[in-house]
Length: 374
Image 1: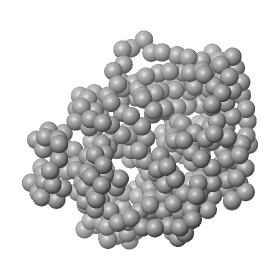
Image 2 (image 1 turned 120 degrees about the vertical axis):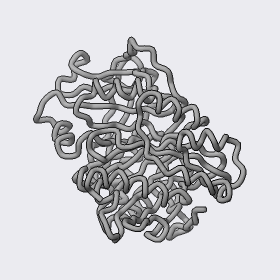
Image 3 (image 1 turned 90 degrees about the horizontal axis):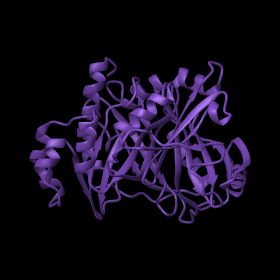
Image 4 (image 1 turned 90 degrees about the vertical axis):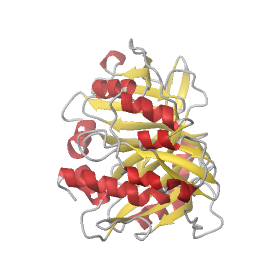
């Protein structure tokens, strides 16, 4: 069970209301092929496009959606563009964690006043479907938060994009919304960025894990989770801790070449169906030994799902005071061992699967050993 840790103040209030995750934008080497992967493997539907055909001469972007999850995949058409430089340095990775707000200009101004570094000033664009206002600030590494105000927009995504559908028949797999996004930062930076979210965004400190909570025989890490007031936005922030060998955080930082988004947890109401479909479509997952399931019911008690099905699909289970959760983690979804996904089903639990940490990180270490980076 996770231990909830109070923030350093009991008066934390959101600096501005956040309605949820608006979109996550990846900078990638080939947006067209990446879009095909997310459609066929993860069941996302193509809804919009921006590129040379719409007047954008330097980049191409594909917008994919499944329920409340929206991904934007952007690639550069020229080697000099900042997107190409980002991909050269980091590989395919997350550039933008966009937040849906009521007033993007107000959110930007308040964040900057509280200490955020501006990335892009407020800008309003319009077309026949209405208008959208966006503004952006820097966060860890080269990641940014973009505030999106879209209450007056009825189009597919935002001005500059045209509606687009794939000729393929796409079958969703039951993904619902972004549960949380995890950032990896360099040693000594975790508390700095927790303070940023508290001071700038008014987030509260939700959970703290130290190297005793998250460690194996060889590696360790530390993590703190910050959340906005309504709980729609949760950002765990990890940093490496001293261990006998190189931790997963250190491996990520070596390959990503800076702090950045490590994994995105996406929620489902039926994890057995979702994971079954993902496996059939070729998505690779980390694997824990079958012995994990010999004692799992002793630890978590009664659950609604079939233990045999969970074992067949290698889905993990944990429980807290509120209920239980089911979770599983993909292997990295690009060649560099950086970004991966967590599939999660919450049955009342609000925690993050602390009881699974040891089994999970031993599974990651097995992959590191295969890559020669442990």
